[in-house]
Image (cartoon, rainbow, N blue to C red; front, side, top):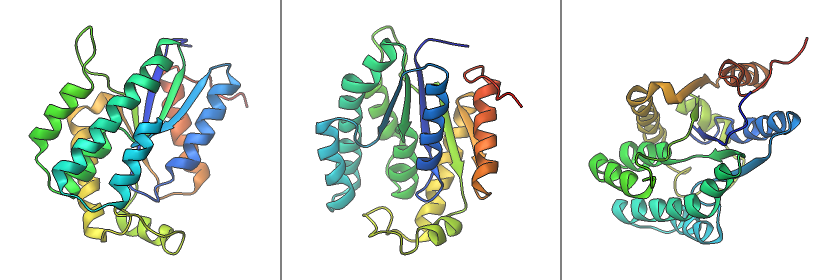
Length: 216
């Protein structure tokens, strides 16, 4: 069992079940004595939460949207993620850069090369390379199914109110990132009952030696 810091991101369109399983996974790690930091993007710091409110609610062009996303990410990395990893904690983050590529790049059609450059600047590590999650869990759900799950549950924000075709492009963006970095991803089919999705999720972590198998 590893005791070094772990950075886990959770991705998927709204309605895919991320929030439910993030909480369950946090409990599983805590049960094994790990300290867990639960956070989200955009957000996670006072500054990043202010930027989140702007991005989700105010009209803006795609470049402004992308710049705000990465500004929030930079502050989040410096103030929360990197310190927690240095302390040996498990960081569970609801969305990270894969979401920006999927939503702004594929959903909005923004220039992927620009997003890549911003990623290289914002996530650069002092020793070289980029800060990326140790594992990204992609809750893959057909957009039409997600729309049915969310119907009438809350007032949609600027992204949630997009048509199904937008989320079809977003899903293609996640698939693109998975093909680029397959070793970093665990794809979980989330159009199944919660207990089946949980078993698949926990198995992915047990396989990597990050959680102990549950005794029967």
